[in-house]
Amino acid sequence: MIKKVFNQRIKPYFINWLDRRIPPAAQVTLDQKRIFILPTKGGYIWLSVAALIFILAANYTNSLAFGLSFFMISLFMLSILHTWRNLAGITLVSKSAESGHVEELIAVRLQLQSSDRERQAVRLGWPDNEQVTYSFESNQDCTLLVKAKARGWFQPGRMRVESVYPLGFCRAWSWVQLEMHALIYPKPDFSQPVPNSKGGGDEAGIQTQSGQDDFAGFRRYKASDLSGHVDWKGYARTSELNTKLFEEPVGQQIRLSLQQAQGGGLEEKLSTLAGWCLQCESSNKPYSLSLPGVEVAANVGQQHLKECLEVLALFTSGRDNSGGEYVG
Image 1 (tube, rainbow, N blue to C red):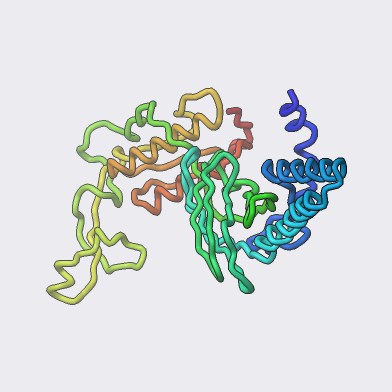
Image 2: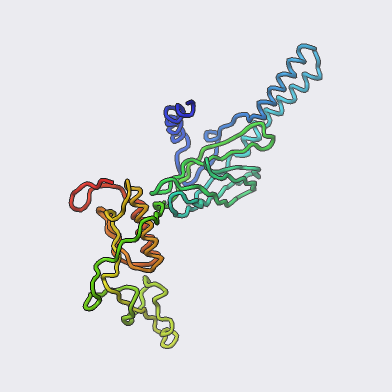
């Protein structure tokens, strides 16, 4: 009940406050405004024992017990300073993030920078994901894994950076949101069969177009040509770089559209389309993608697959070309 009230009422205000205090950026330096510190469970126990010794010392007028309680409190106060200094001044720099599908672990590469002193046992990571601990002196490259939760531009949320060094009496931490430039594709669904090829009928007299099946000649090489289509043997003989041309019947193209996908909502249909694209690519069959307002011409290859997955990742329901409203 308490957790539900916190998520519904308190958490939104806390997130807005954090956005003002620690705004998202590609590079964040931890300073006194961005670091929070509180005693750990062990710290509270330490203070409780020091308070108990102080009460006993006052009751029995024992100077040795007074000295012990003051020593324990002084040690605790020193740990506050050193724990805070272990994080203060660290700069976190976002390097890169890999694209992937929903529910996959995305590799995020960061760099921890410290120009003034050595840092010990700095722990960082996202909630509900594996956290890692680093000790470094100047710069430290690190790779973190975080599970992608939604398609679109990668937004893993705020990362927690913390340390309890040196004594474990206090925990200093910060919530940092680094800007990531990566796309999350829909989770592929392979449960539905790929639609039949476009067209059909007898092969006699059918039109052909550039494809992958039948050899049709050569042309001069272009920088955008696939390396697998380059005539390397001819290049070894004549030193002229040419590209092989192929033809295929138009009827063998596979047209993928949102209307063909079966599912209860938009996300399920996009997952089906993502699975179809991967299956067509693995079988080396040219395929096109049709979404309301978006058309990707038939092709095959990793670049074509990437283009289709990016379209699926960024697609939002809206009006199609005929003016109708898509309902997922």
